[in-house]
Image (cartoon, rainbow over the protein chains, first blue to last red):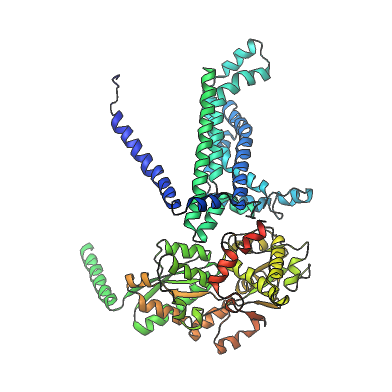
Length: 271
Length: 333
């Protein structure tokens, strides 16, 4: 083994494993243990009842579209923040982090009061037949709001590293503006974009606080899975609640794994 | 000079200390449901004065509020509540079933089935009652939007649901099938299911959603007092007698040695002073002299009880609110 300047591989690895185990794996293991109170049939009928299935579709579907929407928007925002100097840039930069820091309930209440039919946007949108608050669109709006910083903050540092000289070189070699973006800028950003997408998506799947205010919580229509988990808890159905938690855990993990693999594949094929 | 000051301070503490050795400082935690915030602030102060006069001890009562079943769950999970004052008996039953925190017959330990104050449900409509809502059948008309919270998570929502069911039973000579159709038709007109009573009030009052809000009578009277020009209260022909129940939590009071004071606290709810405070906050008192004094705020409603029509909470919960039971069937065909 090569000698390193700073020793301590064993120590830091041990520490990292212990920390992961304590903070992440132990609570997750508890979820599985609690679910074990159910028989396989009970578990299966709990996690496949129509109302629950409708909530998976809503949760994973709107999370996907919210993250997807945040990709172009987030990249443009990052681009503006990195490439241009203008008054108010630092303020704008700070604003991006707000959805991170804001308690999600506050975000939910604020969004609801804006999009409800008495709100600033709602009073114009509703007469046009566009309903946002208390519909699936509202859920999507909330998830877009909380997901934005993830895309911006993962793309931004990569964009800072990407020298404008590269674009100039492409231009002098005869590339059109569109070609420069497609062939030079996007490929360099792609791994960061995928990471940002995955983070925004994962965050949205687990979101509870902001969504319950704006969704209206109608069974089969606007009920997200985390809400069903809470509902089950309020009925003292601990095992049922953890059964749903286990399903969300497995699906989220599988999706994140797939995204990782895609990213690695893209990265390799380029290198 | 520094040292004499310090000495004086020490002396003062010693004196105070000896004084409080004879007068105990007791702390109680009352875990309650959503709309009782204001009334218990006043009641706790009155009880502290009463207890001080009776025993010389200083008692401070802390309060915790939230959706009724969420509060019960917090107590099951270890919140050290000396007393619980919840929206419905089913949530107190849960303390027995899920943690054996109190005996099964807790409801027999205090008078009137452990319900010292009651309330009922009524409708709140917008000024001038533009949609002409008078009684339960108006709620199923097309084009009427009804605000009521989710019965799975909210105490009052369960009362609302059962009140509508009880009305439909009476109107259809006890036909359960017709009652189910009637209640389902109401929920077809519900655009938002909030998780609790206050949330539903906010949706109706602040967000301007819905034509009618079904909620606690006491909550509606409070809203009406705060915004007298915007709303009207409509009293339906028949409604359910909502009985919020109270109990001391045996496991906690034994550990903390607060049995006597916790019991006295709940019994004080039945006293003329306690009753007057609750009547002032729009709950229905049972003592005749208090009832007489506040009768102007309580219109006559034909009230039925959950025991009469549904055979008690345990049965009603199982038949109506369990997963896959009647309420779920409204949404999942």
